[in-house]
Length: 406
Image 1 (cartoon, rainbow, N blue to C red):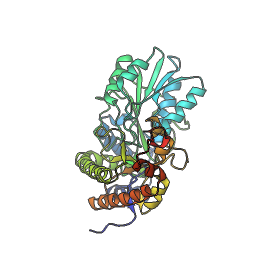
Image 2: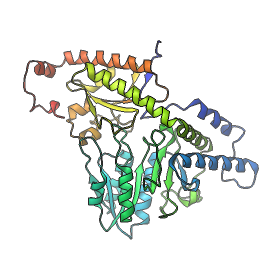
Image 3: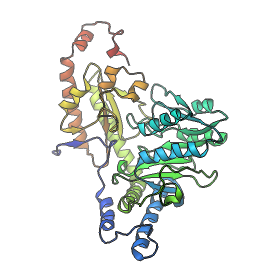
Image 4: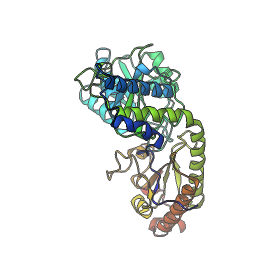
C-alpha cells in the first residue's frame, strides 16, 4: 500500500483532532453558542450542561470526581496554577519544593520563578534511563516541604516515573503531590486516587482533542487541596481560574477523553508494536543508533534515538517528508541541545544527533516501514560522510572524544 506524503510522526508535539471529536464540537460554534456562566436562559444552561458532561468524561479517564476537574487554556497554564497556586497558598507552612531536572519547561520555569521569590527548590537528578524514584523523594522531603512536582512520563524520551510510589510517599509525609501527566493521560491507565495524586495537569491536543484547552485536577477531599489563583476576575472554576470557558474546546476534550478511555488499551498494544518495529528496524541496520531512555518502562508511542557521528539537523533535513522532532516542541526553536538528554549524560553532539519519533492513532504499519527505510538510508549515507566514523572503522580510540561519550 502506498503511503501519503508527508508522514506525521510528531504526535508528542500535538495530535490531529479525531474526526469524532470535531463532530461533537461543531454545534457549539454555531447553534449552541451560549456562555456556560449565563444562568438565566436556555443557551447558558445548554452550554453549562455540556461543560459538566465533559468534566464527567475526563474525570472517568483519571478516576476523579467531575467536581475536581478545572478547565484551563492548556497544560502550561495548569502547571503554573498548580505550582504557583499551591506554593503561595501554603507558604506559611513551608517554602520548600521538590522537582526534577527532567521536567517540561512549563514546570521548570515556574519553579525557577518561585526560587527567585525566596522558595527553596530541590532539583532531583534522574538515573541513566531518565527515571525519578520514590526513594529520592523520600530522602529529599523536609519538614518545610509543601509541594512535590514530578511528571508522569517524559515528553522527549517517554520514560515513565514511579508516580504511584511517589504519591504514596507524599501521602505518608503530608506533602501535596502534583504530576504533569500531559504525555501520559489518554495513553496509559491513570487513577488519581490509587496513585496518590493531589494535582494533575493535562492538555487536550496531546490526546486527539483541540488546542487551547486543558485540565487541572484538584483534589477535594482526603486531603482537600486549595490553590491561590494566578488569574482573577469573575470567580469561575471554584474561584481558582477566572475567565469565560472555551465551551467548544471543553466539549472536544471531554469527547477525546471518552474515546481514549474506551480505546486506550487496544491502542497502546498497537502503538507499542509499531514502536518496537520502528526501533528494531533502525537499530538493526544502523549499528551506531541507540535508544534513549528505558527500553521497556516507557510510553508505547514514544521512541527517542541518537545517531552518533551524525549531525541531527542534517538527518532531519534528509527526512523532510517525515514530520519528526529533535526535542520538545516548546524548545525545538532553540539551537541548544536537549536538556533532557544532557541530564542523561549525553554530550552536546550526541544530544544534537537525536530524533524523537512520536507515533499516534492515525499512523499505519506501512508508514512505519517507509520511515524505517528512509532513516536507515539517510543515517548510513551521513555516516559514510563522517570523518569521526571513519576513525572508528580504522580502530582509532575515540574514548576521549566528547562526541563518542554517552
